[in-house]
Structures are given as structure tokens and as C-alpha cells.
Image 1 (spheres, rainbow, N blue to C red):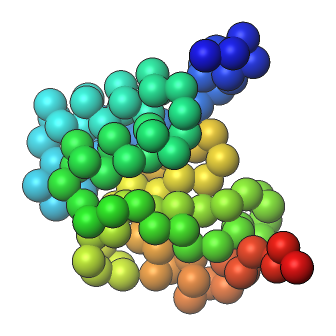
Image 2 (cartoon, rainbow, N blue to C red):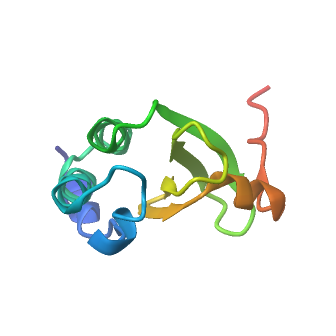
Length: 114
């Protein structure tokens, strides 16, 4: 892992154990494991996939770009648009539902590469 990646690891933010436990089937031990995965796995894509596997959701999906943060938003697919799940924006992992972000018009499609 590069020095830059190591230095940025401490900048990653994770929700509290209690917030993670608001997700269906996530107990205290599962919440602790999810936080640890996000804060210790160097590659963000691999960290997102590890959190998905730990909390038992159905894959990590790209939602779009957050209009205010200008960062890509990913979520752990729980199968329900409005069920609490884990979302990722930049270096931040948090609990919420992706349906509300879309409803409030906070997500846009990424700009085309062409």
C-alpha cells in the first residue's frame, strides 16, 4: 500500500455501532466487523465489497454522483429502496436509504467519458 493510501486511511469515516445496528439483521458484532473493514482495508472498492459481505446485502451498486459533495455514491443493495443500508460517498461510510437521496434530487448521473 502506498504512503498516500496509508495516510488517507485515517480520514475514512464510519457510522456508529448503533447506527449500523438499525440495519435489518445487523447485530453489534456484525457492526463492529463492518466498521473495521471500512477503516482498515486499503482499497475502497474492496472495503465496500467486504462491508457488503459482512452485513449480508446483495452487492454494491453505484447510484451516481452526489450533487453537493461531487463524489460518487455507492450503496449496499438491501433489496428495498427505503430500507436502511450502508452508503459510501468518498471517504465516508454512513447509514441511510438511497431512495431518499434520489427523491430529494441529490444524485445525478456521472458525466459521460465520451
